[in-house]
Length: 121
Length: 121
Image (tube, rainbow over all chains, first blue to last red; front, top):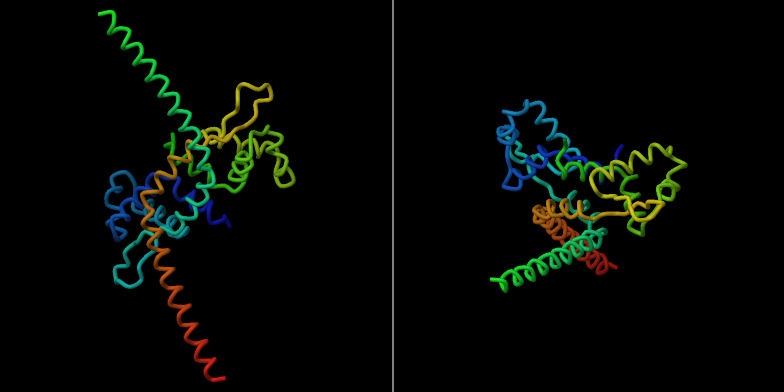
C-alpha cells in the first residue's frame, strides 16, 4: 500500500480532481452536482472514479447524516502535505529573492537608459 | 502534456523522490552520491528514472558550471504547489479546531473522573 503522503500528492496530481476540491470548498455537494460541469468532457463513471481517489486519501468524505449523502471537503490531508513542503520554504524563497534582485537590476538599468534618452531630447 | 501543477504533485507522490529532495536540501550531490543509499533496494536505472521525473517538473536541476554536473534542488515548483494548497487552509484549520475542542472535552471528562475516583479513596 502506498504511504499516505504519496496518496495525497497523487490525488492532487489531476486538474479534474483539483476542480472537484475547488467546487467543494464552496460547500457540500451531491455526486451529480459535482459531476455536472465535467459531463461534457467525460463520463459519469470517470468522474466517480476521480471522486473515489479523493475519498481514498481522505480529502473527500461523504456525510452520513443526510439521506442524500453529500460530499464534503476534508482539509486534514492537505495539512500533512503543506507541512512536508514547508521544510523546503527556504529553497523557493531563495530563488524568488534572486529573481527579485535580478528584476531590480533590470529595472534600474532601464531607468538609467530612460534618463539618458530624456537628456538627449 | 500534463499541466505543471499536476506534474509537480505527481513527482512528489513517491517516497524515493521525496527522499532524493530531502538529500538535496542538504546540498548539491552527484547522481552516484544520490543513488548510493537506495542501491540496496533498487537499480541505478530505476533511480535515474526517478531523478528524470524530478528534473522534468523543475524540482531538480543539473548545474552546468561544474564538470561533474551536480544535482541541485530548485524550490520554485514547490511554491506554486503551496500557493495552491493555501486556498484550502481554512479547511484543515477548521478540522484541527474541531479535533482540539474534542480533545479538550475528553481531557476535561478524564479530569472529572480522576477527581471522582480520588474522592472515593
